[in-house]
Length: 325
Image (cartoon, rainbow, N blue to C red; front, top):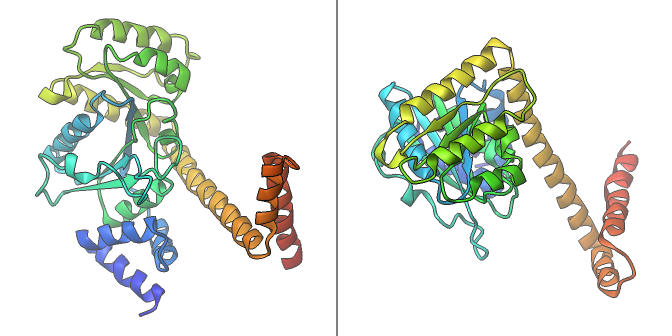
């Protein structure tokens, strides 16, 4: 069977709601198998209908517990949910270290919920290179809601704003999150702020500090609310969901939802442009021995990485474009 035929069969299964085919399709895309391109052609040509919510924040703030609680509320409303949990990567296998097993707790046998762990594989920004692709496959499957939980680095998780309709920034008292927020530019990406573990000392102080910093933002547009939750006990999660839905209504009222979706497509496009360029340059320069010579020159102090990179791009990207035209 050809890769195109295998992709067609996978696509048909995903559209029919076959969870095994969805899991297989995600693996095909993550691993760059032959049928990945054909499968993604189907996925991206289907209409993007699911609402995408991103949860980000430092390790230990309770993101996974919050995801579990939000999934419960969505299911109570009769909605189906796909969850993408971005995990750190194994330096040996490249696979996700934590995996689904720690997240699939109260919805293990719920056919209306699908959890998938994605390995970050060294990708900065708290998400995986294939986050946009997996969102597209989950849309093809037909989920009503998609939740993306970032890897939990705490310092560089800003890429989620490019994929999600609504970004929830999660903080917890006593972890120095206010300082991290300033460093990482978290204030700029958050549509909703959540102080989780609000039963701990310092919750009121954390809320005041976040609200004070939010007042420093440029006036106008959406004003991010600050919600307090104790996700482990389920307290405040309904208020959090109301805040998320309020932001969605705002996006629709000012015709910004389509702009956010264009931003998501731009993020995916940039990933593929980088990938195509890097793969082309490394492959061709390795074949003719140029890469080995440049590595020798770098180690000898004859050149520098910036100059070498520009030389490689000129030689293997620009020259190939000129010869093809």
